[in-house]
Amino acid sequence: VNYPALGPRPAPDTQAEIDLELTAGRYAALGLVSHAGLSATLEQGAEIARLTLTLAGGDAVERPIRAGVETAEWAYDRADVRAVVRHQRPEPVGHHIGNPQANYYYAEWRFDPPVELTGAQVRYVAPVGRFYVDGVALRQAEGGWVDGPGVGRVWSERQNEEFFRRMWAPFANAFITALGVVLVYRLTRRFGYAVNVALAVALTYAFATMAWPYAKYDFAEPLVTTELLAMVWLLRVAHDTGLRRYAVAAGGVALFAIATKYVTAFALPIALVGVVATAKPGATWREAWRQARGTAVAFALPPVVALPVALLGAAMLFDIRLLYERDLIGGIQRGWLELPFALGIHGLLTSPGKGLLWYNPVLLVAVPAAGWFVRRHGWRALVYVAIPVAYVLLYSKKQVWYGGNAWGPRYLVPILPFLIVMAAPLIAAVAGRARMAAAKAALAAVIALSVGVQLLGVSKDFISYLDIFQQQVAGLLPAKGAYHGGLDYQPWSAIQPEGDFAAVLYAPPFSPLLAHVWLLRADAVNLLLPDRLDLLGDVLGRTPWSVFGISAQPKEPQNGLGLDFWSTTLTENFVTYPSLLVWVGLALVLVQTLALVGWGAVVRGLWRRPGRWHVWRVLPIGAAAAAILVFDTLHFML
Image 1 (spheres, rainbow, N blue to C red):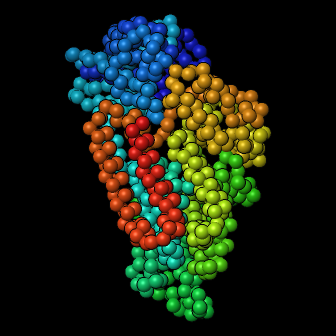
Image 2 (image 1 turned 30 degrees about the horizontal axis):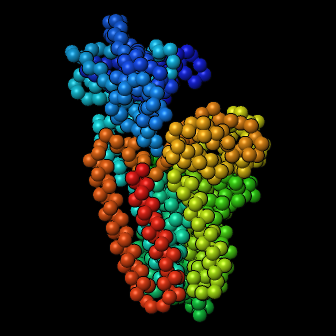
């Protein structure tokens, strides 16, 4: 919410009085969501702020906002605060995201009969502390509610109607990504690899790449990724079975991929060439084309027929100027063609703040293994090489190559499954030989490191650190830190609406990877040793860039505290809906049961086969799956 904090005296970060900027009208009640800070010394019932209501005739009506009645200390439930706080705690109506010990409180003033309001102000009156207005709403005389201004909401029953209708959206990408994992497994099996190898490849993609963090956000990349995988899989099935209906289905999926993100159109010619290349082994190119042209035509049919019609219809209905040549070319020149190629390539692949290799360390072994994959499978590997190369070349020329505020290089998420599938020969060789203990240990270590990096993104909201840097650190540094890295990119980063993050992208001291390690250390202290504020302050004071000798201490680093598992976010949003939490818990048990049943069906044949060494080859996969299920269940109980 965009109301500034209230305090006992005007200061850069507080005001003595704020106007709630309410719309004039006839109202029967006013509701206020708020919390106090640094207010533990206020006695029960002490007035912390005063609400002044201006009536239509010019009269003013004042109402007190009291500690322990209408509001209270936000950190009341923290052990160190609870030991010294002098006022009571009203029933919380919500928690801060990722921090169940941080409360919101609700107060309501009713007007009987309804009154004509023209304005409302809140003035701070206590000698110490802070007061925060988190949400305002007015009930009209007719019974409906009107929201006050703000850029965010604290959820209430009335406000949740629309949210409940859309609550499937945060979970959609999780299931979409899970479908992508299944497709990775099926594609690996299509290349003739054993079940245990295909499972290892699929699980590596699921938990050792950015696919995992992006499964919790509503970006389009997870859907595009799964659509590309489905397209490639359907084309492979069409080739293996000779049934062209699968090729038509692949074309339909490609059309949906383009509708999801229009730049995906470049994958169509790659897929068409791949259809012919798949038929190439043992044949000339002319014979391969003759054999594959029916499949190619069936695949191209849905996009060729539907796409022009859809664009023309959209242009007529919505005046989409994408169809106008001048605007299209101008947009491409402004957004795609200005950035130096080397700057974009370095940013996408190896930059400290967004490099694909550092956010997915498993690629350090998967990419070199691509040559092995190509030698083994020949032209059938074309699509798996061409799609990643095309993505990297395309986005290396885009101004915002990093994908805006996100975790890692967002635009490269769709290439991850194709790169991981090409690691199948390496995984098969390491898993299939008993005397490769060192190689197995090295591969396991790289995968474990990659899983750890994904945990950094899963457990923290990437916005937390980016906000700290932009609001509390960048202004303390010359060129906003770009002298330490990213100065060449600053002409483009400085004009971005989300802020100048050149240093975050290119300077090692400000990498989000290091920042998330720093903040998670502080989270661990905050959760395990809540009374040790001295230790928490020490950890927060040791910023990653201080290790590099850079003095730029954020004023409020504690703003970055809080875990961001889906369970903690759910609890924060729906703490007043215990029945919903129960149903979600039951749904979790159901999903876990289905996962276990599905897992058992897949590996049943593996476990039944005799042989000690065979059991040891599949045991790590079973242990990893069990650990994942335990983790998923335990963090829901935090």
